[in-house]
Amino acid sequence: MVYTDRWAYAPIGADGSRELFALADDPYCETNVIEGQKAIADTLHAKLIAWMEQMDAPADAVDALRPA
Image 1 (cartoon, rainbow, N blue to C red):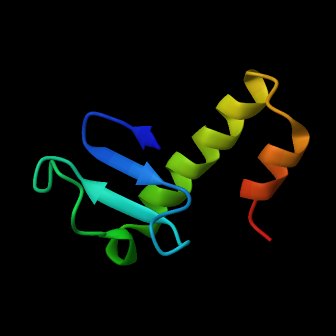
Image 2: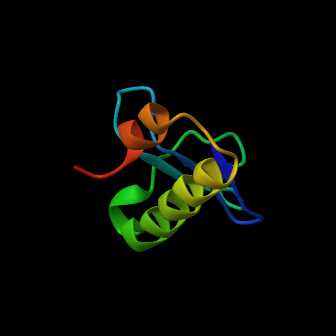
């Protein structure tokens, strides 16, 4: 899960797809708003990948989250 002051992003949500939540409107992360905010989700996803690489996460773990 990636958090900012405004967003919560899950690369793999409850149904296996990506999820994005607007924390100001939905602090309990109940409504996935990714359909209207794909650019935000893509940016947060890229930041997650970069952080994982910086932390020397196993390549298999990083590759599993890379877009196909």
